[in-house]
Amino acid sequence: GDSVTQMEGPVTLSEEAFLTINCTYTATGYPSLFWYVQYPGEGLQLLLKATKADDKGSNKGFEATYRKETTSFHLEKGSVQVSDSAVYFCALSSPNKGSYIPTFGRGTSLIVHP
Amino acid sequence: DAGITQSPRHKVTETGTPVTLRCHQTENHRYMYWYRQDPGHGLRLIHYSYGVKDTDKGEVSDGYSVSRSKTEDFLLTLESATSSQTSVYFCAISESKGSGTEAFFGQGTRLTVV
Image 1: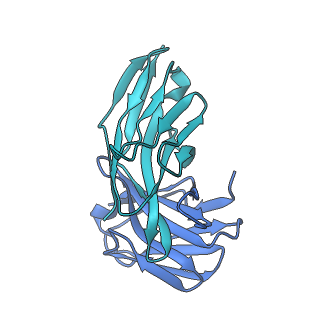
Image 2 (image 1 turned 135 degrees about the vertical axis):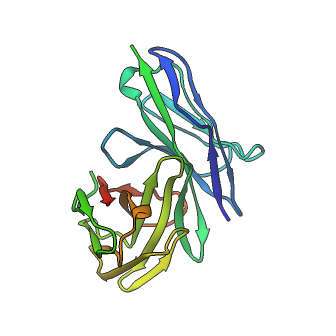
C-alpha cells in the first residue's frame, strides 16, 4: 500500500537558519504530494502541494519539489522564524477504489529558537 | 476557514463505556474521514465516508464504528472504550475530485479513557 516516510524530529534550529525536512514516498501510479502544518492545539492545514513530477509547491517561504526519480518531496525554507515552530506532515493522495484518501507520514516537529 | 466542527473538544471517559464523537461540516463535501493522532504514529485513518450511508474501513478500524446519515454529519463511535483508544481524533473533509484535492481538518477531539 501507499506510505510516506519522513525524518524523525524534533528538528531544532536557531532563527534565520536553513530548514530541510526530508520526505520519501511509496505509491502505485502517480500520486499528488502535500505538506501540511499543525500549530499547537490546532488541526492540520495545507502548506503546499504538487500534483505532478518536477512541480514545485511553494507558500510562506516554504518550497518542495516533486522528484519522481527519487520518490521524494523534501520541504525547505531559507530562513526560519520562531513562528514556524509547528509539526509538519508530508502526505500523498492517489486513487484507491475510486477514492483519493490522504496518507500521512508520522510528522516532524520543528522548534525554532530566537 | 472550512466549516468543520468537532464535538466534544475534550472528553474523559471510563473503560468499557460507549463514546460518540461528532463531526459536522457546512461545506457540502462528499468525503469525510476520521483519523487518530498518536505520538510516533502520526495520523492514521480509522474510517472514511464517500457519501451518505457509504463508509469504509481504514488501517486502524478495530473497535470503532461510524455512521453518516446526512451529508453534513459523520459520527465515530467507540462501542466499549479502552485505554488504547486514548488519543486525539481529527475529522477531515475533501471534495476528492482528484488526487490534487486537499483535505480540510477540524480542531480535534482529545479523548482520555481512564
